[in-house]
Length: 302
Length: 243
Image (cartoon, rainbow over the protein chains, first blue to last red):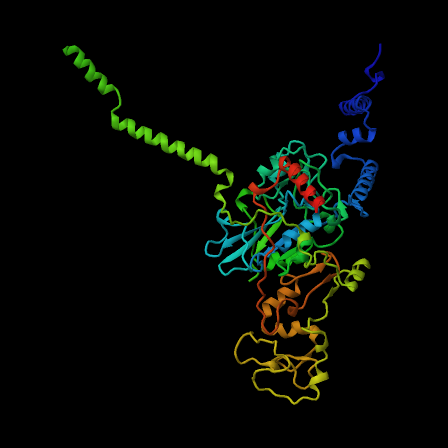
C-alpha cells in the first residue's frame, strides 16, 4: 500500500507560486510581452522579495530612471538601523508660516508639480482661538508672514505608531518600518484610497494623473520606499525623507526651515535632541484622542 | 339642489384653498431658482474670484532659494569620517566683507562712548535691541575692537558671540546648546553645523524679520486631473512651438 509520503508534496504556497509562474508564461506567450514585464506585474510585496531579486529590480529601475531623466539615478533599498525609532518635533512658537518646508520637500521628494502634490500643509490659525482645525486656513498669502494675529501649524504625516491608514489597506501596500517610518510600496498600491479616508491628518495624497516632473528637477538620490517617481494612480506621503534619514542626514524640511522650528532625531537615544526636547518642553500630538499615537510632536519652546 | 350644494361645500373643504396653493407655488419657485443658480454657478462658487490657490508652483519657480543646502566642507569631512558629535558653526556674518578686522580702522580712532547719530560709517545700523541705555561699547570692546566684551570683562571673539547673547538670554542659550533652539544641518546621528545667534538675529535689531511666504497650495477644485491634463498640455506645447 502506498503511503502519503511518496506522493509529491504540494503545499498551498508552492502551488500558488507555480500557478503564477505558469500564468506569467501563458500571458507572455499570448501578449508577446517580455518575461520581465510579466514578472513585474506579478512581483511580490517589497517585504517579501528576495535580496537577489530586489537587487535586479533596483538595477532595472536605476537604468530606467537614468535613461528617462538623463541623470545618474541611484535607488536605495537601505533598511532600518537597529535601535532607531525616528521622531519629529515642531516648535509652534517659532514657525512663521513661510512655506519653505513645503517647497523644500517637493524639491527633495520628486512630487508631481502639476497636478500639484504637497506633503506638507501649513495651516494658519487665529491666535485668539488656539488650535482650531475647522477654522484654519491653508491658502493664506499675505505680503509678509508672520501676521500679527496668526500662528502657523504645518501638518504632514504624523508617522503614527497605531496608524489607521495601515489597518485599512486591503493589499498591505503600506506598513510601518522598524524605525517607525510608515511607507508605501508604489508597485503594490492599487489606488483604492481607503488609507486617505482613514488618515485623520490628510497626510496622504493621490496621483490623479501621470505625475509631471521635469528631468532637471529630479532628485537622483532615491529610495525604493521614498522619493522614486510615482506612477499614476497611487497614494504617496511623507516618509521623513527616508532616502536621507537612513543615511544619517536630517530630513530636507528640517534643514531648510529658516527659523529652526523643525527638530528630528532618534527617540531611543537618551542624549538625542528629540529626547532632550521631550524632557524639557511640553509636547503634544495632534488629535491625541484618536489614539493614533503619532511620533510627530508639536511644542512651544517659549 | 340642496344635496349638490352640500357636495360642493364638502369638495371645497377637501381641496386646498387659494392661499395654500400660492404658498406652495412660491416654495416650488424658490427651490427651482436655488437649484438653477447652483447648477449655473458651478462648483467654484464658494471661492472668491480673487482667491489664491489656482496656480501650481514648484521649487523651480524660486531659483533665488537654496534648496540644495550643501554642508560646510569640514562638516561633510567629519561626517564621512564618522566622527559623531562634531558641532561647527559657519563664520560670523558681517554685513560687508571688508568690515573685519575692526582694528584696521579703529586703532587710529579716538574712543567716543557718547550716544550719537552715526555718520559716514556704520550708518546702516539701527539699534533696536532692548533698553534705551544700551550703546556700542556695552558689547563691543573699546580697547581691542576685534573682540566682544562680556559683562565681567572677559573678551570673546566674534565666532563665540553666543556667550555674549547668553548673558541675558540664558534659557534660549541652553536650548540652543542642546539643539532645541535654532537651526541645525547635517547628520542627526553625527556631525552637524550650528548657526550663531547672529546668523538669524541681527544683534542690533534682533527680531526675526518677516518674509514673503511661498505661494499657497492649489485648491482641490483647481487641481488638474487626468482628463484635463492631456488637451491643455497639447495646447501649451503647440503655443510653445509657434513662438
